[in-house]
Length: 204
Image (cartoon, rainbow, N blue to C red; front, side, top):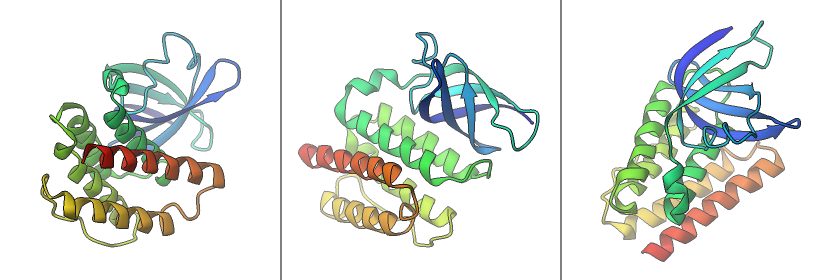
């Protein structure tokens, strides 16, 4: 197996003394997990920030083997990690994606939507410019994974409508998408969304 593509970093967990298991989302191959040698080192840590766009080369001797990943940074989201609200949104969107998608299944619509969402989080003047896109991305995930539903048509200033939909959608994902996730992962995801909700309410 060999993959060469741009991808979105969705997660990275330590593996061994110096390595990392990274999960990256590509347009043509879907979510790809692989081993990054030296991923915990000074050079690679900034590359593996969730939300970053990277150029990835993945190689494996067979389809059942965990690939080795070589990554080069294309676009960094690092500057936005010091901002509490964008940081929480990026963390939730990428962590949610890494946990919910099956590996090596193509989801081009989700890849395009996540890429657009991350750009909006980083470049919109305020959260009013990206919260509707976040809710739309979550709704698209439910649709793409076979749970049905509709993508709501939201206006950026209509917070009286936006937050109830945000809450209802969170309950729906907990019952459906996240219900079969392992306890630790489930807890991390729910905590990440709760932090995002709290920060949105402070802004409102």
